[in-house]
Image 1 (tube, helix red, strand yellow):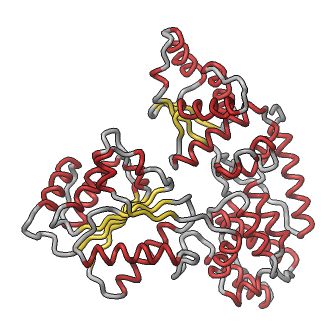
Image 2 (image 1 turned 135 degrees about the horizontal axis):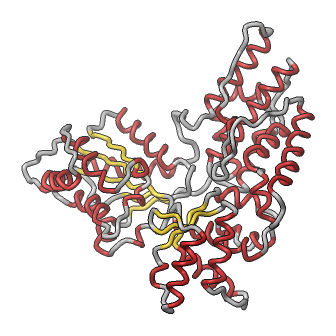
Length: 470
């Protein structure tokens, strides 16, 4: 727990440099400070530079690398999303029935962990239906891109009417009147995809209620699809909202290692991939990534970094047969095996357990934060199962402050970050009154990826008890 970060950094860099030397890759100087929250670094986006003075066969090899690198960018969406055939059938059927019946009365709720093709699959289905000349307008809205849930009202009003209205309240009123109008003012079916829809949650749940109530109106001609990362989001809604949401649901299962390999082979065309990658390399990558994450974006990132490492080797030595497993291992280390993450295994059990409980609460609920009182409840339930003494709020507070000092979490009350001083004062005020009601609104945000926690603690006996829950 008390190992100095500088020492960890030296150990980590020595390990990476040894592999660089074996591959003939020059040492990289850091050009920017690493941030603990991200698993990406400047390696993942470095542009390709080709020099005309290089031999022709080297230029051809660099061109091949550039093409494969580009095809592995997250922004490069393939024409077909693999391994999602059943989900495509269900989504297609739902939209087609909505268009046929001038709207679906209830919404389709799509859930699954991040990075497994939910949004891309819906967009592919949309393109296929439009290519069949089906008559509908498609509207995409990502709730992560707005400051407040109510921002959806002006957005939808402009998309549906081609008229601009800046007032959120007025936009909501106009949309409600439009969908309730029985004179068929809406001539064309609208299919709306609400991505990251859990970010539309408000205290009164009115925004979400309107979005699932509008399709109920006879003249609305609305078909609504909702995407979120958590399965139980509908169960956390009010009964009147649940009844309108309905039971149309699709759960996207995580990719396995074989599917990850297939997706990589699709991304980089078969002929090119055989030229660039050794036969066992992608198989190794699929299995390696599948052990810590089902997010295909992580796999693409490791693969891009391996290509850049191979490019450096080619430019230095003017020779490269193929990208081997060693390139993948080195790329993986550069992205995942950071000293501050590897140091997690040296924490004491209380620190590790609380960090795991925070990560588990965030993973299960699908939000990017966890409520303080829910983390404590989960933590103490675990201790009770093992017949261990539960932690007091004061003990938990101390551990949380330690995690915050280590830059692994952020403790917030609303938008206010709680420092050690004001957090302690808030807690003490509550304890003095023997009441803890005002701690319910305290949030905990991770400043480290859950995948980094899983990777840093992958060999830890305590974490292994919970690994199957992630």
